[in-house]
Image (cartoon, rainbow, N blue to C red; front, side):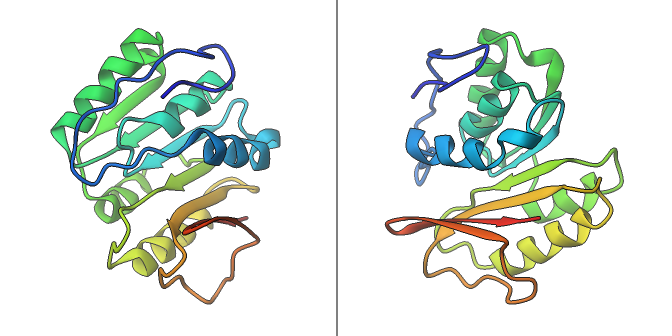
Length: 178
């Protein structure tokens, strides 16, 4: 895996061997950042279920001011830190060990994010609750804040509000909320 664009373009990512880890593909990251193109520069970015950090690192490479990476796996957090160092982004990021839902509640008390991205494992049961919590935090964030969720097409998502935009990639869906 590599960074697609920006200051770290073509840099290889350290990807840990962790069961169930499915890094966001180049095509999906390209689509995500095409949709977010107008709001990425200078943004505070939240990457939940960060894995190897590909999405948050891509955000930093494309001009995000700050990224908070959240993952429970020690191997993933170690890989993210290594990737941050290799790309010289360490001063513009933090890596947090936490459950995504707990992190959303705790991080909501801090400086607001402009973009939140979540890519939970397929079958993640409390996905609807997590999205509802993110959307609740979004109300306190700056105008134009975006919540993007990558999920299995069979996942149960909240009906209210419905996503502003939806992109399909076979079994995977990316839902955007503005």
